[in-house]
Image (cartoon, rainbow, N blue to C red):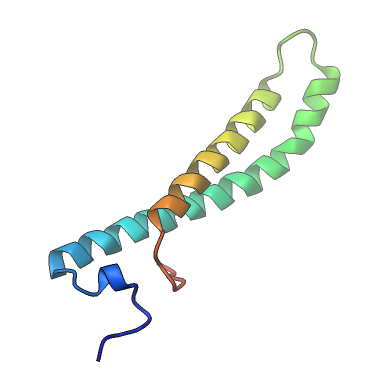
Length: 94
């Protein structure tokens, strides 16, 4: 009897295709972890970013630029992670 938890298109995969699918999903999980780490650090850096925007003269605002880069990286890693993890119904922690 077929495993009904597995999507229909994944029931007839060869062992090599299953290995490639697992590698893709692991890479997606890695990207999701990087996304959440970037979000945590960006949230903490927001404190210094606000001070930087208040007191820095002119366009010299390095903490603001770092904060914007971290939020951008979080978005990029999040989108890539969700796209690579598609089709997975379980939470893998490795």
